[in-house]
Image (cartoon, rainbow, N blue to C red; front, side, top):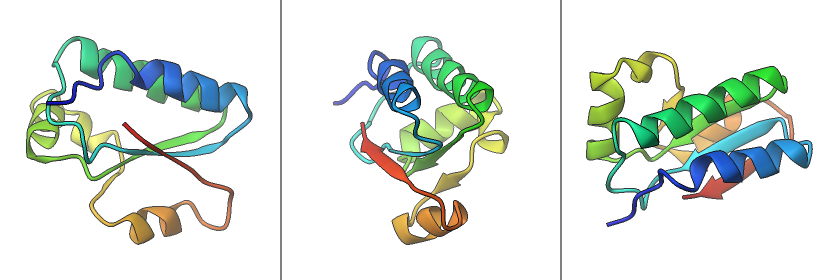
Length: 101
């Protein structure tokens, strides 16, 4: 079981500090997302991206992660994709950084 709670914010902060503006978080290996700490990490990362005029989108959020996002209402905030090619196209022609969690 992989818990992304402790690594999301740091990873996104590093990418933003490096100047990346299009970030796609691949959550395929995340099987558990704590509804407090994990959601807090995602929301803080999303807000940081917005403040840095960047976009943060999610890829391959599994059944359990999707369920938590739906319960807390964040499935309407995050753009969530099942297909990587579609997710990449959603950014347009801009440079993309994809990070597996």
